[in-house]
Length: 301
Image (tube, rainbow, N blue to C red; front, side, top):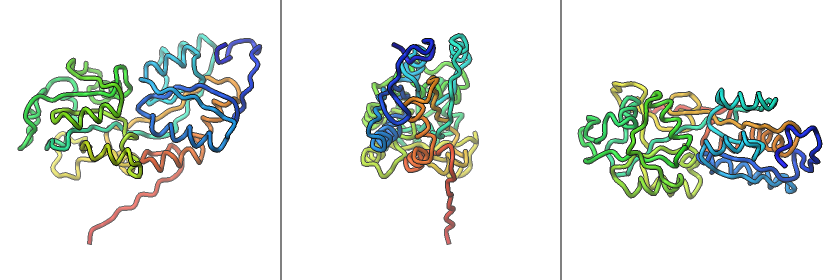
Protein backbone atom coordinates (compact mmCIF):
# COMPACT_ATOMS: atom_id res chain seq x y z
CA UNK A 1 0.00 0.00 0.00
CA UNK A 2 1.31 3.44 -0.88
CA UNK A 3 0.74 6.59 1.09
CA UNK A 4 -2.94 6.45 0.29
CA UNK A 5 -3.58 9.72 -1.49
CA UNK A 6 -5.44 8.15 -4.45
CA UNK A 7 -7.02 4.98 -3.23
CA UNK A 8 -10.65 6.02 -3.09
CA UNK A 9 -10.63 6.18 0.69
CA UNK A 10 -10.25 2.42 1.06
CA UNK A 11 -7.02 2.50 3.09
CA UNK A 12 -7.37 2.13 6.84
CA UNK A 13 -5.03 4.64 8.46
CA UNK A 14 -3.89 4.11 12.02
CA UNK A 15 -1.67 7.16 12.48
CA UNK A 16 -2.66 10.55 13.87
CA UNK A 17 -0.73 13.85 14.01
CA UNK A 18 1.00 12.64 17.18
CA UNK A 19 1.03 8.82 16.94
CA UNK A 20 1.79 6.01 14.57
CA UNK A 21 4.61 5.60 12.05
CA UNK A 22 5.51 7.70 9.01
CA UNK A 23 8.41 7.41 6.55
CA UNK A 24 10.10 10.63 5.44
CA UNK A 25 13.12 11.41 3.27
CA UNK A 26 15.60 14.19 4.04
CA UNK A 27 18.30 15.79 1.92
CA UNK A 28 21.51 14.49 3.54
CA UNK A 29 22.92 18.01 3.81
CA UNK A 30 20.28 18.68 6.50
CA UNK A 31 20.88 15.47 8.46
CA UNK A 32 22.21 16.97 11.74
CA UNK A 33 19.41 19.49 12.19
CA UNK A 34 16.59 17.15 11.12
CA UNK A 35 17.84 14.42 13.45
CA UNK A 36 17.39 16.95 16.25
CA UNK A 37 13.82 17.62 15.12
CA UNK A 38 12.97 13.92 14.84
CA UNK A 39 14.48 13.10 18.25
CA UNK A 40 12.70 15.99 19.99
CA UNK A 41 9.36 15.25 18.32
CA UNK A 42 9.50 11.58 19.35
CA UNK A 43 10.40 12.51 22.93
CA UNK A 44 7.41 14.83 23.11
CA UNK A 45 5.06 12.30 21.50
CA UNK A 46 6.19 8.88 22.63
CA UNK A 47 3.67 7.07 20.41
CA UNK A 48 5.06 8.74 17.28
CA UNK A 49 7.72 7.07 15.12
CA UNK A 50 9.24 9.16 12.31
CA UNK A 51 11.40 6.93 10.12
CA UNK A 52 13.80 9.26 8.33
CA UNK A 53 16.14 8.32 5.50
CA UNK A 54 18.94 10.72 4.54
CA UNK A 55 19.80 10.75 0.85
CA UNK A 56 20.97 12.94 -2.05
CA UNK A 57 18.37 15.44 -3.21
CA UNK A 58 17.43 13.60 -6.42
CA UNK A 59 16.71 10.37 -4.55
CA UNK A 60 14.66 12.24 -1.95
CA UNK A 61 12.43 13.81 -4.60
CA UNK A 62 12.08 10.50 -6.42
CA UNK A 63 10.81 8.92 -3.19
CA UNK A 64 8.19 11.65 -2.86
CA UNK A 65 7.02 11.35 -6.46
CA UNK A 66 6.95 7.53 -6.24
CA UNK A 67 4.77 7.71 -3.11
CA UNK A 68 7.45 5.94 -1.05
CA UNK A 69 7.33 8.70 1.59
CA UNK A 70 4.71 11.20 2.67
CA UNK A 71 6.98 14.20 3.05
CA UNK A 72 10.51 15.34 2.33
CA UNK A 73 12.90 18.03 3.55
CA UNK A 74 14.87 19.69 0.75
CA UNK A 75 16.68 22.91 -0.11
CA UNK A 76 14.43 24.01 -2.96
CA UNK A 77 10.74 24.18 -3.92
CA UNK A 78 9.16 21.89 -6.50
CA UNK A 79 10.44 22.07 -10.06
CA UNK A 80 7.95 22.50 -12.94
CA UNK A 81 8.16 18.85 -14.03
CA UNK A 82 7.55 17.72 -10.44
CA UNK A 83 4.49 19.97 -10.21
CA UNK A 84 3.25 18.37 -13.41
CA UNK A 85 3.45 14.90 -11.84
CA UNK A 86 1.32 16.01 -8.90
CA UNK A 87 -1.13 17.75 -11.23
CA UNK A 88 -1.58 14.48 -13.13
CA UNK A 89 -2.17 12.67 -9.84
CA UNK A 90 -4.63 15.38 -8.76
CA UNK A 91 -2.60 15.98 -5.61
CA UNK A 92 -1.93 19.44 -4.19
CA UNK A 93 1.34 19.15 -2.24
CA UNK A 94 1.95 21.47 0.71
CA UNK A 95 5.24 23.36 0.46
CA UNK A 96 6.36 25.04 3.70
CA UNK A 97 9.43 27.22 4.15
CA UNK A 98 10.87 26.24 7.55
CA UNK A 99 14.38 27.78 7.66
CA UNK A 100 17.20 29.47 5.79
CA UNK A 101 20.41 27.50 5.40
CA UNK A 102 23.75 28.34 3.86
CA UNK A 103 26.24 26.49 1.71
CA UNK A 104 29.70 26.69 3.26
CA UNK A 105 33.02 26.58 1.41
CA UNK A 106 35.80 24.85 3.34
CA UNK A 107 39.55 24.49 2.75
CA UNK A 108 42.53 22.93 4.53
CA UNK A 109 43.66 24.92 7.62
CA UNK A 110 47.05 25.56 6.01
CA UNK A 111 45.54 27.13 2.89
CA UNK A 112 46.16 30.91 2.84
CA UNK A 113 43.41 31.42 0.23
CA UNK A 114 40.55 31.54 2.73
CA UNK A 115 38.96 34.75 1.39
CA UNK A 116 37.34 34.30 -2.02
CA UNK A 117 34.96 36.30 -4.18
CA UNK A 118 31.93 34.89 -5.95
CA UNK A 119 33.74 35.46 -9.24
CA UNK A 120 36.71 33.40 -8.04
CA UNK A 121 34.41 30.61 -6.86
CA UNK A 122 32.73 30.62 -10.26
CA UNK A 123 36.11 30.22 -11.95
CA UNK A 124 37.06 27.39 -9.58
CA UNK A 125 33.86 25.40 -9.95
CA UNK A 126 33.67 25.75 -13.74
CA UNK A 127 37.35 24.91 -14.23
CA UNK A 128 38.30 28.35 -15.61
CA UNK A 129 41.00 28.43 -12.94
CA UNK A 130 42.54 25.14 -11.89
CA UNK A 131 45.55 26.25 -9.80
CA UNK A 132 45.56 28.16 -6.53
CA UNK A 133 48.24 30.49 -7.88
CA UNK A 134 45.79 31.71 -10.54
CA UNK A 135 43.61 33.35 -7.88
CA UNK A 136 46.08 36.19 -7.44
CA UNK A 137 46.91 35.73 -3.78
CA UNK A 138 50.29 36.91 -2.50
CA UNK A 139 50.97 33.56 -0.83
CA UNK A 140 48.74 31.10 -2.65
CA UNK A 141 48.68 27.38 -1.99
CA UNK A 142 50.90 25.60 -4.56
CA UNK A 143 49.44 23.02 -6.92
CA UNK A 144 46.09 22.26 -8.52
CA UNK A 145 42.72 23.09 -6.96
CA UNK A 146 40.99 19.88 -5.90
CA UNK A 147 37.19 20.38 -5.86
CA UNK A 148 35.13 17.99 -3.71
CA UNK A 149 31.39 17.67 -3.11
CA UNK A 150 29.57 15.56 -0.54
CA UNK A 151 27.82 13.04 -2.82
CA UNK A 152 26.80 12.41 -6.40
CA UNK A 153 23.50 14.14 -7.29
CA UNK A 154 23.67 16.18 -4.09
CA UNK A 155 21.80 19.41 -3.50
CA UNK A 156 25.02 21.33 -2.81
CA UNK A 157 26.41 20.45 -6.25
CA UNK A 158 23.06 21.42 -7.78
CA UNK A 159 23.12 24.71 -5.87
CA UNK A 160 26.67 25.53 -6.92
CA UNK A 161 25.87 24.87 -10.57
CA UNK A 162 22.74 27.03 -10.46
CA UNK A 163 23.78 29.87 -8.16
CA UNK A 164 27.58 30.05 -8.46
CA UNK A 165 28.35 28.68 -11.94
CA UNK A 166 25.13 30.29 -13.26
CA UNK A 167 24.11 27.15 -15.12
CA UNK A 168 27.52 26.36 -16.61
CA UNK A 169 28.87 22.83 -16.35
CA UNK A 170 30.90 22.05 -13.25
CA UNK A 171 34.53 21.05 -13.52
CA UNK A 172 34.76 17.40 -14.63
CA UNK A 173 37.58 16.64 -12.19
CA UNK A 174 35.37 17.34 -9.16
CA UNK A 175 35.42 14.52 -6.61
CA UNK A 176 32.35 13.22 -4.76
CA UNK A 177 32.92 11.84 -1.28
CA UNK A 178 30.56 9.33 0.34
CA UNK A 179 29.04 11.70 2.91
CA UNK A 180 29.41 15.08 4.56
CA UNK A 181 31.69 13.77 7.36
CA UNK A 182 33.82 12.05 4.69
CA UNK A 183 34.01 15.35 2.81
CA UNK A 184 35.34 17.13 5.91
CA UNK A 185 37.82 14.31 6.45
CA UNK A 186 38.99 14.59 2.84
CA UNK A 187 39.51 18.36 2.97
CA UNK A 188 41.28 18.03 6.33
CA UNK A 189 43.81 15.61 4.83
CA UNK A 190 44.30 17.24 1.39
CA UNK A 191 45.89 20.74 1.48
CA UNK A 192 44.80 21.52 -2.10
CA UNK A 193 41.15 20.62 -1.59
CA UNK A 194 38.15 22.94 -1.55
CA UNK A 195 34.86 21.47 -0.35
CA UNK A 196 31.17 22.42 -0.39
CA UNK A 197 29.01 21.50 2.60
CA UNK A 198 25.68 22.43 4.17
CA UNK A 199 26.13 25.03 6.92
CA UNK A 200 24.24 23.00 9.52
CA UNK A 201 27.15 20.54 9.64
CA UNK A 202 29.36 23.28 11.11
CA UNK A 203 26.96 25.88 12.54
CA UNK A 204 26.08 24.57 16.03
CA UNK A 205 29.28 25.46 17.87
CA UNK A 206 27.95 24.00 21.13
CA UNK A 207 27.99 20.56 19.50
CA UNK A 208 31.13 18.49 20.16
CA UNK A 209 31.16 17.00 16.65
CA UNK A 210 30.91 20.46 15.08
CA UNK A 211 33.77 21.67 17.26
CA UNK A 212 35.82 18.73 16.01
CA UNK A 213 34.96 19.49 12.38
CA UNK A 214 35.94 23.16 12.77
CA UNK A 215 39.34 22.18 14.16
CA UNK A 216 40.00 20.15 11.01
CA UNK A 217 39.08 22.68 8.29
CA UNK A 218 38.91 26.41 7.63
CA UNK A 219 35.63 28.06 6.61
CA UNK A 220 36.09 30.43 3.67
CA UNK A 221 34.87 34.02 3.80
CA UNK A 222 32.97 34.93 0.63
CA UNK A 223 32.50 38.37 -0.95
CA UNK A 224 29.82 39.42 -3.41
CA UNK A 225 32.09 42.18 -4.68
CA UNK A 226 34.48 41.34 -7.50
CA UNK A 227 36.94 43.88 -6.08
CA UNK A 228 36.74 43.77 -2.28
CA UNK A 229 38.99 46.30 -0.54
CA UNK A 230 38.91 45.20 3.09
CA UNK A 231 38.51 42.00 5.14
CA UNK A 232 35.00 43.08 6.19
CA UNK A 233 33.89 42.63 2.59
CA UNK A 234 34.17 38.86 3.10
CA UNK A 235 31.58 37.09 5.27
CA UNK A 236 31.28 33.59 6.66
CA UNK A 237 27.96 31.72 7.01
CA UNK A 238 27.16 32.87 10.53
CA UNK A 239 23.53 33.13 11.60
CA UNK A 240 23.57 36.95 11.65
CA UNK A 241 24.73 37.04 8.02
CA UNK A 242 22.01 34.58 7.05
CA UNK A 243 19.46 36.79 8.82
CA UNK A 244 20.60 39.96 7.07
CA UNK A 245 21.09 38.10 3.74
CA UNK A 246 24.69 39.33 3.68
CA UNK A 247 26.16 35.89 3.12
CA UNK A 248 25.98 35.18 -0.64
CA UNK A 249 25.51 31.41 -0.56
CA UNK A 250 22.21 30.85 1.18
CA UNK A 251 19.10 28.84 0.37
CA UNK A 252 15.72 28.12 1.91
CA UNK A 253 14.80 24.83 3.56
CA UNK A 254 11.37 23.43 2.66
CA UNK A 255 9.11 20.65 3.86
CA UNK A 256 7.08 19.27 0.96
CA UNK A 257 4.19 17.02 1.93
CA UNK A 258 1.83 14.93 -0.18
CA UNK A 259 -0.21 13.77 2.80
CA UNK A 260 -3.88 14.47 2.06
CA UNK A 261 -5.07 14.06 5.61
CA UNK A 262 -4.10 15.04 9.16
CA UNK A 263 -1.71 12.15 9.74
CA UNK A 264 1.66 11.89 11.44
CA UNK A 265 3.41 13.53 8.49
CA UNK A 266 1.24 16.61 8.96
CA UNK A 267 1.90 16.55 12.69
CA UNK A 268 5.67 16.41 12.20
CA UNK A 269 5.61 19.19 9.58
CA UNK A 270 3.57 21.37 11.94
CA UNK A 271 6.09 20.72 14.72
CA UNK A 272 9.08 21.71 12.55
CA UNK A 273 7.31 24.86 11.35
CA UNK A 274 6.02 25.66 14.84
CA UNK A 275 7.62 27.38 17.79
CA UNK A 276 9.58 24.41 19.17
CA UNK A 277 10.88 23.37 15.78
CA UNK A 278 11.88 26.94 14.91
CA UNK A 279 13.80 27.23 18.17
CA UNK A 280 15.80 24.14 17.19
CA UNK A 281 16.82 25.87 13.96
CA UNK A 282 17.71 29.01 15.92
CA UNK A 283 19.89 27.12 18.40
CA UNK A 284 21.67 25.25 15.60
CA UNK A 285 22.88 28.45 13.96
CA UNK A 286 20.48 28.47 11.02
CA UNK A 287 17.84 31.12 10.39
CA UNK A 288 14.29 30.04 11.34
CA UNK A 289 11.55 30.93 8.89
CA UNK A 290 9.38 32.50 11.58
CA UNK A 291 10.14 34.34 14.80
CA UNK A 292 12.52 37.18 15.48
CA UNK A 293 16.28 36.94 15.76
CA UNK A 294 17.96 39.58 17.85
CA UNK A 295 21.10 41.01 16.23
CA UNK A 296 23.53 42.82 18.52
CA UNK A 297 26.34 44.94 17.09
CA UNK A 298 29.37 45.27 19.30
CA UNK A 299 31.35 48.48 18.74
CA UNK A 300 34.95 48.63 19.84
CA UNK A 301 35.81 51.50 22.16
